Length: 451
Image (cartoon, rainbow, N blue to C red; front, top):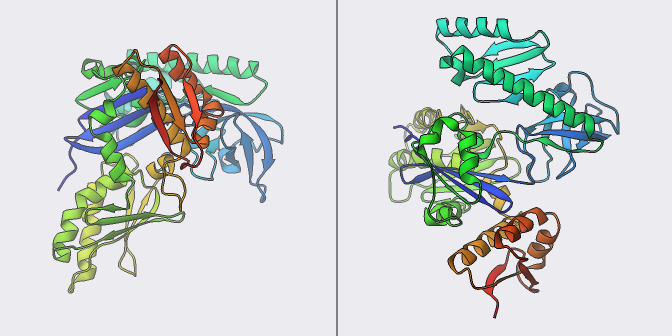
């Protein structure tokens, strides 16, 4: 039993966000949302300290957008800065629900071949580079090229790179750092200095695919810049605004937001994610074997994080040995998960325990409002509404469109998500008519032709 290889990436750029879906065959395995106003992992900010945590072992940092970040003492080698100080920070973990992003003052600039850390001396190589001769070659190159005040981590893709490519990557990192340092010195308020990896590169994380389809303005150019090694397989989609809908991705999203998925019931809570396996018409052993591949897919598709407990169907005899075998099989299926989850084993209660590092917000946190409201977030609805407006105008350029929506959606477009509305209006070539409708759900909207 093995996981199919990813073969297709669908990149859709629309007002306010870039979305990337990764497929293996006909199945969607990963969904990535990169919103323009989100502080993403790898982004660099000039932040302003605005208070200490109660225990004094961390500070809260205003990033100039979104919730305050959390900078712990262990992530600040030079010591915690005082209140009001400006500090250069990098996003370690993206914000989730009520928690702001986790920060580090030990910043680095990444590329496919290396990660560059100014001011933190040291040379290290990816543990996946196991060939002794290659490790020796790369170590010798780094010792000759890296300055005493610089730190470099050579990534897995560096193993077959020649010295010219490595030197070019190091020179590029130095130039980027010089530009960032100048920009930082000019700023007097908090704000983003630099984005991290481009969306396609961030979604693939060094993996390869056989095809990349791009839709929306600048999506093609952005994908080519993100992964120049895939230039030959990156293509523009025919429909500029409905790529995900045409490829069935919206259906996969609906499935991933439902607690019930075949024999699986998946419940996310603040503390953990509980997954129950229903045997249905099958024996417990057969049911468990059947759900294993789908279980591994749903964990990645929903971007589940933290502690995950799985209650496999229990056979009448040999339940303990059977569940240990299920834990081993699940570990094999999760081996290709870029989040590198750990299958911890079977608890005393017979639950298989998995710990999966948090890498961005879970899909439900991005798209669904907190319970008991079973609806999309106002932001997700607003961005979806703008996509539908552009699709409607693209199919009938003559007709003028009005967006009728709840106050939450309209207020968001006129306020914190104004940049997305501005983007849409630039594509339309005229202002979009916005109409507030009262007495409707927070996520309600309708794209309506003007008479």
